[in-house]
Length: 408
Ligand code: TTP
Ligand code: MG
Image (cartoon, rainbow, N blue to C red):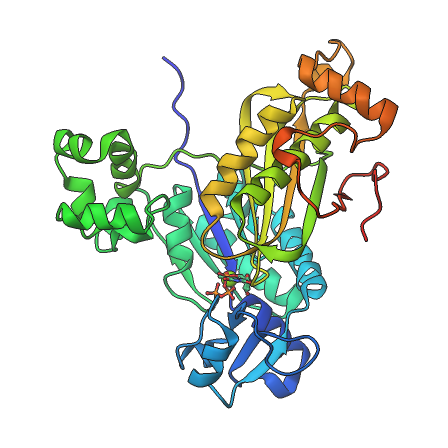
């Protein structure tokens, strides 16, 4: 009999009112004030959208992704400050450093949140709750900011738990308590339940996760298909998804693109991802590498920055394969907001390929593209779907090698 895996201890760490808290930390006159991040950098409110609001401002109903003009109606005496992404990224790096000192198994999901699998650190560090407290303290000491942490046996429950007692919260869901913890929550709290699915569930009389967890499986499958059964497993607190750690010495190869103007044009977004995937694949092939993990970076018009990673069944250096995964990840995060930046990176390189034991065998189409690119430059051959795009791309190389073109 195969040995049983231990019950896991997963943490979800999420900073409180992240951008606003940083501004309040750095500008004492903003402390205790309703702070709204997302004003025009040139002064005034501008016509943008709110990135985030301090908890003081949330009391007036101001929240992320709301037009600034609407925020001003709700909270005219608020302090409106522009986004300073470079600064937030620096602080994000400090937070992630704190987390990586606890375990290698850290999976960042956005600038201010990450999953950790601390199962292997419980004995040394004294259990999930103690580790969570230590992390909160270490983040406070390093950044003077507060974080909220959820502790559970799976990602889904840890993520919901971290959100329960914000700000400065700590919620522990003990093994065996997952279903009871989830039961009273509305179905929309589940990952994978968008507005349409929510409507269908509610029409079937399913309002809470408890309703979903106890619904007859045959009925559920008849109404919602296979996806319904997956959702039911989640509603019962059964979520096997692993925390995708970044291997310590993981070199990654990636490219990203900032649009001249934020866009919601799906054709254009898709074409950009294709082009990024091709670019990354080309650089993998140049190094005779194949990657196991694809990571999508996504920044929307409010400057919300997310990363989503997926591990492939087989390592690849083929553009289309990278694109397929990136596109799926994109569809999982893309909503109605305009997109500001997209990036694809690849990591967890296949060791055998790295040692040069196997010659890389690019797909014929990719081979042709490499040959043409080598001879005539990389714009010589583009996919049909990329034709007609006016905008010049400025791929920002994210790896240690030379960018093909300098970012502007
Ligand atoms: P969140 O963690 O969703 O929000 P938050 O940290 O501001 O507040 P909370 O205490 O509820 O966690 O997002 C992290 C940062 O990402 C946030 O500070 C600003 C940015 N962001 C956007 O730019 N646009 C958005 O729509 C959202 C939701 C976040
Ligand atoms: Mg947060």
